[in-house]
Length: 317
Image (cartoon, rainbow, N blue to C red; front, side, top):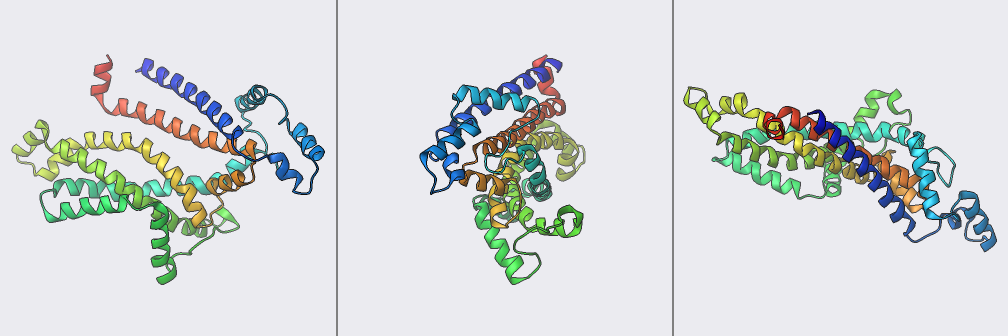
């Protein structure tokens, strides 16, 4: 187990290094010039070049990359080329919206998918199971922005249950208002992601119901539902854990879109604005932070899956 954990940690470091190189290189080949953006449309070539020199953009790309990585190793993701503000500080500030949104979305997805996925498997031969299966497939196919527009039209515009947009200026100093503002965006992401997760849970539960130990438990007098819950849930839990890494990536992508739709001051909205402004230093720090989060969660999920499933430990041994 120790060797597996160390291997995963080494792969995590390698993955972060490769991701940083790809992010840095990709952003440098995009069209546009941040120095021109800062100087304005009426600037002279000499003024633009002076800004490039002051920002270090005239230096060789390998030197710029080494400086950036050196700062990251000291906990510094760089500074905005436009405002000079710390990227790390900006990320921590915006994360106060994005992280609760992602966690609340994940909670909603799990609350929807786990019981309905198991129920859909138990009732798979009946009309209820078929209806849940078809509904989950239909909902999973809906783009998250369409789902958001539908929910806004129904629950915000028509029923007036939720605010259509915005986040309180006081932020989490007013926790009730802040949570209320995030409920509809989180519901938008959670319903779509929950439908995707439901299909995996249903398949895992159906597979577990066909295992000998579940059939044996049922033969000893347990109902099919109780046999599945008592003896088959570990397999279902393993599927949930394995899929969560992919779901987290989907939640982050969904958050970028939903923050635009609901006018939330989170990381996704900030990232879109910084891309438009060609603030390379800030954009590369934001993308690397989000990529690193996905890689860290994926590594944690792999380790947790090994802990949950003794068969993986035995095969490794």
